[in-house]
Length: 132
Image 1 (tube, rainbow, N blue to C red):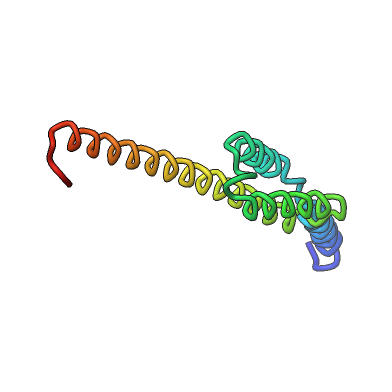
Image 2: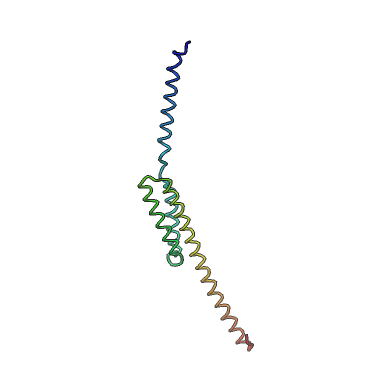
């Protein structure tokens, strides 16, 4: 076989590989919408709202909502990587709001228990005739 008879199959293989690479590159250029990430952020916001984060961690809850809205806008603009990042940040902010809310509620309960214990101690001291 001479060199000229081998050129067309090589050319066809090269053209096929180039076409395959272009197909892969076009598919890889736009990742899918981060639906699971956005749903996780929405759920985290709902959980924070149920935990009264609007009262105890309003700033963090507002940040979570803002980032989720921005993530949804990024999906509309087909900026999926940005949308995913914003969705993750939104979920983190909502979880922070939940944690701060729970901590604030626990601190309130703790303070109420302390006051109750102090009142009980004073009553015990009064009944025994001793002073504090």
